[in-house]
Length: 286
Image (cartoon, rainbow, N blue to C red; front, side, top):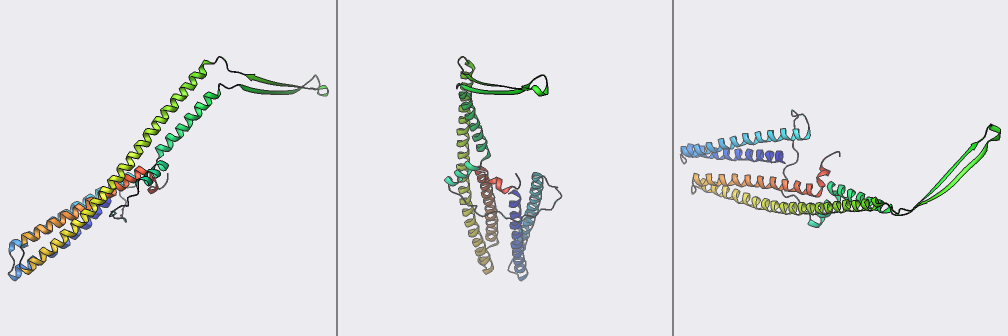
């Protein structure tokens, strides 16, 4: 996600450079025609230099993020990576009930505690069964004699019945098994509550992040429209270079806010996948 954000920032910085180079060309043409000043050209040049510097920073951030990604997946850090998926605009938000159902069926810690609870329940049943009478059946048969021609067949059949009467350790074992079972049940209930809290919090965070993306998208559209108006006023002789510079800064900040909002939405979406257990489907192998 960090690498995707850095790639999006690079694209944004390249668009800024293209925009400011066009504005610099306009300022130079106006200065050559006598309708502009040297200060306008200098300000436009500064804007281009700032955009190029921001592009270098974004490229360095992308390389750092890619190195961190290679280290995280255990690959050679000299490998060339190409990101094919951009930041999602607005990740889908599932209903809370659906997300909870998915989490209860896929979260590994819930499966582990359920197996422990089943094992503890069986242990309680096994300890209780020690109170019941037990029946045994024995059969023994063989041949015996002095010579191979006079071997006689002998056999013994026995049945035994045992009744536990004075086994005090049985009650202690049953009580200990019940205590272990109740302890596992308490842990199960707490984990169920923790998972539900994680799911509800992640769903709420994703909804908030998507709302931020919608607001940031609208702000970018308004800022771009304001920049176009400022440029048209400047070209018609009604506006001033200061107005264009302010519109440029507002547009650049609006695009930066949009990228940040999209990155936060992607992070919230991955948090939701982790909360529901679907994050395991995105990783190959076991």
